[in-house]
Length: 106
Image (cartoon, rainbow, N blue to C red; front, top):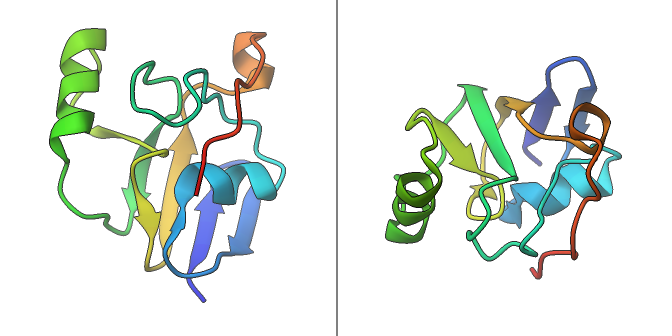
């Protein structure tokens, strides 16, 4: 199983193909997902420090464009974990003071 390392939080194994946002949530990382994983709010963005995900889909490109998000970040609701990665969440409950949002679907 692939491993996800979250800077400052630790490393955990994830079922291959699982959405990153759900893997984070299931492992106690309170990443925001205010739109419920629909790539509308861009609050679940992460910086990928090591490892790779597939190329940006149009839905991610549109979310970044509409929200003026830096293009080196990714939306954790739109990517699946297929190999070991190291990431840094951008917005969490702890650093934003906001509620997480509705749980994203598989």
